[in-house]
Image 1 (cartoon, rainbow, N blue to C red):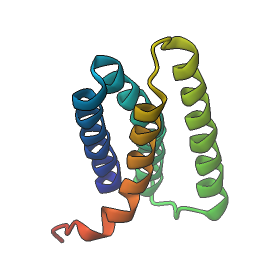
Image 2 (cartoon, helix red, strand yellow; image 1 turned 180 degrees about the vertical axis):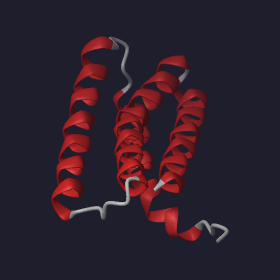
Image 3 (spheres, helix red, strand yellow; image 1 turned 45 degrees about the horizontal axis):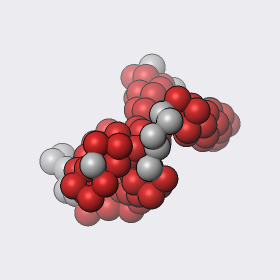
Length: 115
């Protein structure tokens, strides 16, 4: 799970760098807002699952689904907050930052971990 969060952060950095090069400083921060709106709730979700595993409890389906619901609602809330607070939001960069952070999950299986 932590590997996925790191890939999401890397994708956000790539999106922000590209948006900054193409659209300037507002594009950079818009992509950062878009990516972090997805990454921050994912960090807390991964942390919660890790704590459950340390206690020796099995990750129950209900706990997982409740955590996923909170993560999704937090993402929507952070996206709305970004739109309200950042007046110079560049929508293209914002959505690209969000999309790359979301799609970074697809590449998590390609990164090998040591066992």
